Length: 599
Image (cartoon, rainbow, N blue to C red; front, top):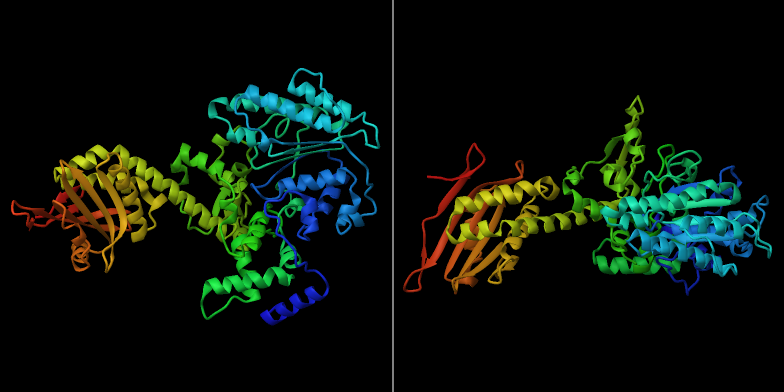
């Protein structure tokens, strides 16, 4: 479709009444009634009827956070209530074989549990069960423990009158939330508590119409993901690959066919872009695909879906943003970085990431033992890559993963950069004493070796991407940490001199005398070139009131991801308060990897 045809389609959509001028974008909504009322509900009811019609009862389903799991459960809840009129535009309404019966529902959202202590967590779950019981006129559950209370509730709901079927539906949302948020020392206790809970569901399958458990990650959890008669995991099944998320057709029908949605977005984007070439309808559609599409949750079918939360936030904000990443803390990923940042020593600029199938599918006892790539797949940072070129794997023993889209790729790079910058700053704090002593004593070789070994060597390719900016960021974070341990030192970056910006400036107020260090960094250029730039652009002139100025030029070797040469020039006031320029000192790295002064 070209842009003219796209505009024609929009006009036809208006004429046919698809557009409501008062339409609101329900960002973050898990209310199927609201989504249907705003005409933004992607019909997933055919999947629900398919699940209801199969012989299975107990199901397990994982998807990344904010991917529509709660909305799916709300849809099941409304269907279980027999709310047929709500779904008159949906597949389940047209399915003549589906019988609209009422079922009692036990719906527990484990992400709402706030207790970290296992004993308090158990009491909180017991209270949640009592809340469900109260909805059906049951004032008390007599059983003493969580497991027995759950079993008692299933018994009572099976005997309800008032038109309810004798087989309740059990819905558990974000089952893994307590495991992800608990302290590592209490993990086993929380795991045991949840295992006992799910063992009850496992043993009571025959008394239920349907049991559906959702989460982000899959752990080795007795009663749910391991042992006989455990839940049927449909997370990777091709039949349910599109059960959550917007499809291409959904995007066209629910959003791009509506003038009241599309035209304000094009107007805002073009106004913000402020370029001669304007966004067209086709370009908008392609940009949406590049930025938010690409999630593939099966290895057996070439399908992909859009992140529903990102799509809703885009149409609400009318701008391309890292909505999914910014809408909630990536708790799991941050935990992994804190525990072992070296796990992320991967070249993220590669197009795809191969992993052995058995390793990918293996269910681990805890998140702490899960390999990085499967974990990043489950949390939504990677997805299946079904590029036909990978089919050359004749033994079919390898899966290939990739970034689903631009939003996720840029978000991951951002969080890695921020986290490692913080790590660099913490490393700088540790080295603060040696850094300050070497600078104050003009022990330049010692200073340069600390930078080389404790700063840049540790940053490695997690931080450094062979550009001058990444080099500057790693060094600044490190020096900023070193200079923020005392009240009389500071460090800053990108200081404006009037005709340019210096890379890094540090000031040390030691013994009531101010010393300023001006750094200029160069990639694959001699350090003397850096010093010449400091002079030609007057980077140090604004510090002429200081007692001493130290100009430091550094050469960064992108192949070695480290500094290899340095030039240092000291300007110091004499007794007449006139700056005297000391002889320039030049340094290079020897064969052993340490700095030495050049003759």
